Image 1 (cartoon, rainbow, N blue to C red):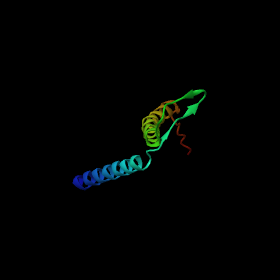
Image 2 (tube, rainbow, N blue to C red):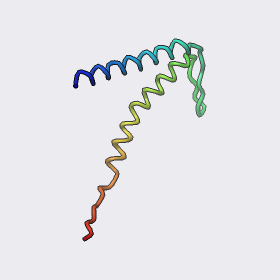
Image 3 (cartoon, rainbow, N blue to C red):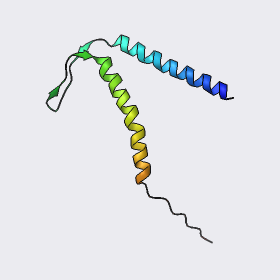
Length: 80
């Protein structure tokens, strides 16, 4: 059973990697971003999108950990 799960995970990782590569190859047009007076140089759209994906993948779990730590423990009341 563990072997099947491992194969499924490897297939999912390969599919995600192929989708990301296809996205990068299809979005090569150069753009410059401007936000709050700061501007970037000309880079392909895919670079900004992949960077945003990576930042989200790092911040999402981090925010989940922070929220779990701040949540007070629930008090269970037993009524008889």
